[in-house]
Length: 120
Image (cartoon, rainbow, N blue to C red):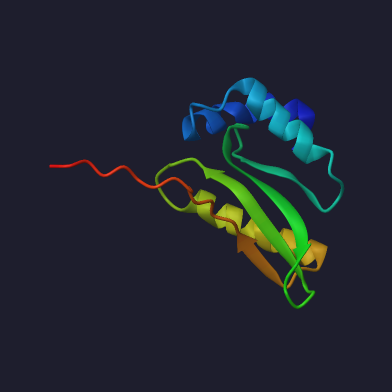
């Protein structure tokens, strides 16, 4: 993703989490696109140039010292079918090969606050 593409991807980010403002998104993009060749952001578009998925990536070393492709901030539009899912898988496989990575990891954040349980 280039800086010019960032505003075009924002509607997908907003649909995923409406609490993320455009300014917060642009700050995130600015931090990610300036980190070098082994990290960045990828957007997946259809032929009409509509963004259907995006993710951040970085190349890291696993516990054995082997290169792995780490995927984070994965946002995929909820559309019928699995074509976008297959496109994301294909893109990450190509990237792993390009960077010489043995594995692909997808980070899943978890919330540190305890869920609220209501008394009945």
